[in-house]
Image 1: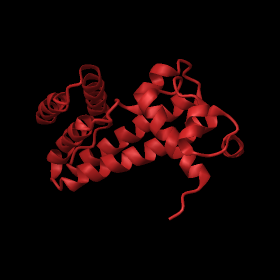
Image 2: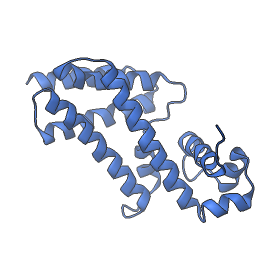
Image 3: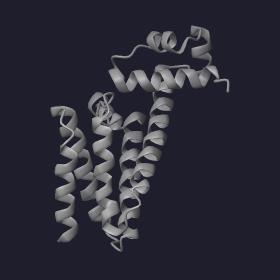
Image 4: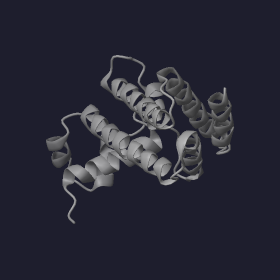
Length: 183
């Protein structure tokens, strides 16, 4: 299957932005990595922000699909499925390419809350909370506040795993979530 120039650019940007960060990655690096001409790049993406937004959207779509598939593949019932969130996170934290949450990283790089990158980061987190709320509902618990609390546990585990290089923070967050679900 032939990959279009646009897809090659997004794939390269996706990898580079996650590995190096938005500010540290230059357009010339994306062009070189994607093996397209500069003119081709600018035909598809008039500015760096355009490729950033498309790469972040791709990250959002892929990551949320991976996460959903991993948690649902555990095929655990009720509240155990909610706890499976942290088993999926542990697997991600063990990946040598793990660099934390791309969207938390974006909020650290883009200071202006009105920027579209920050809006996409907020949407990612809202979609994550929505997925957690869906699994809670399947477990017989309809509580949007609880979904947001579990979202905080997820983000905290991600940041701690990134900061300390310790994937066991997923299990620490799992234990906290279990205690919350028992209460």
